[in-house]
Image: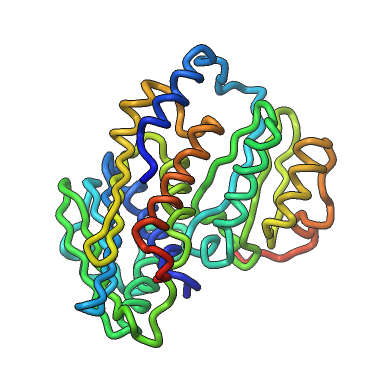
Amino acid sequence: MMPEISLNVLDVAENSTRAGASLVTITVEADTSKDTLTIVIDDNGCGMTPEQVEHVTDPFFTTRKTRRVGLGVPFFKLAAEMSGGSFSITSEPGVGTTVTAVFGLSHVDRMPLGDMTSTMHSLITMHEDTDFLYRYTYDGDSFELSTAEMREVLGGVSFNEPEVSQYIREFLRENEAEVTRGRTI
Amino acid sequence: MKSLAELKAIRERMQGQLGMREEGEDQTRVVVGMATCGIAAGARPVLNKFVELVQERGIKNTVVTQTGCIGICRFEPIVEIYEPGKPKVTYVHMTPEKAEEVVTRHLQGGQVVKDYVIPAMISVPQ
């Protein structure tokens, strides 16, 4: 198991980049009135067949040939269900995949959300050819990061240039702090 | 809210230096295993530490990158260092603190940190 939800997001979003997605949309939404924390990872990668979708939450299923276990998705599902939430995957070959995990926000067995800034920063800087759209919402207050927008401003300067990399980290951290106003998820 | 205006200023400062960084054969690669096994064992802070220090200390010709499962999950977090003309070095059970030592002693000092490399006499189940 992962110690925090943000690590599940990092792990499962890696599947999207490996599926050849050009755009991965990651949404984090905490809603205290509904008492839910909803995470959606949506990509336009190669997608899965209905048979693959059916088996993807089985830890002993993987498309890899080297080993016969695949724990990323089962971990994420278990974490959501442990907190009284739900989990679903929809996918279509050639169109993409959407993974939705709903957590019980105040449930005692819900893991902390953890360091989403590090997760997004790693994804963005390690996959420069993939665009990420990230939305973070807490009770209606939200911020958004679009790498497509940043790319346009940067005009060819790499996300891995130290100053840019630092800027992305600060953008994520400061805007999240502004939205959560000290309330930890 | 932090805005994109700041990013624009960075670009304007950087513009003159474009093209200075080239991927070439003389480049050192630091590769961190970031599959489920690596992430669960603590690879993310290790990766962050390498990225941060390589940038902070301006270490030239060095890229920090990631890969999937290296195949020896019980040794995660695993970091491989590829230097041109030298054999690959595999560091195991890494932490951010060990990463800092590897940056100082290996990437900057040119010495392999023997205490953290994979033991020579292990049996890896096939």
